[in-house]
Image (tube, rainbow, N blue to C red; front, side, top):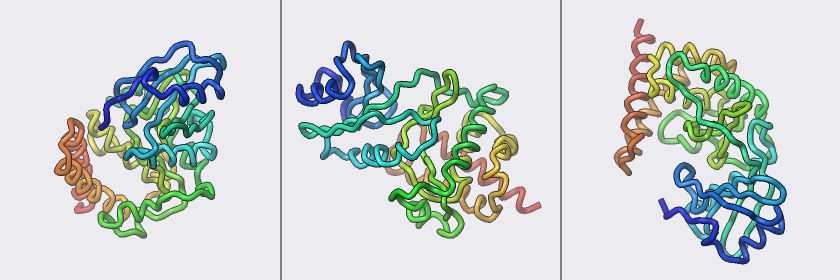
Length: 267
């Protein structure tokens, strides 16, 4: 991951262009962790507080910023609105409505679990059918992990449901739509289910939680079984390619879920 840049390190022309869109920037606060981008900062401007993210146009993450800029106008209001996109002096920046909040608690018994299920229910309903914008088919993304027809569908998916992409303030919001895909409506809930297992839920309890989401409640068993197995193989690859602190726990959670489904199917 590249070194996180600070607001004052941006070229003067880039900062001037931001101010043309939002008014004078009175203060800027870098966000040191989270999103994989060159710059992530909260800026206080004449028009209010804005979350600004982005990086160099020729950098490895530029395609992710373009993804997010393309899909944002089509997303429901639980997603912070994109106010502007700027390309200047070799930089690509996105300016979003600022949202204050904390990341939800996924532990068993947490009151945050119900809002997460409600958000996933609403988003899958509102984004089916998917907006008419070019995004990758999830079946193509997972083409060597699962039979394509099992995950194909016409829902716009988020696919990166890490805790840091949920912000709970006056209501729950879902941020960072840089890896969208078109696929079966239950897939985002399946990704979230594994996060619950990592947070301490037994697989049966995590699936009981997921059944609050209508798209999940109607998911075919064959497709879910194949997805669980594909997720294990995906996290194995990630762990072998670049060992990260979260890879092992997520691989363990995926294995717990797959093994649970195998036991249930053998009954």
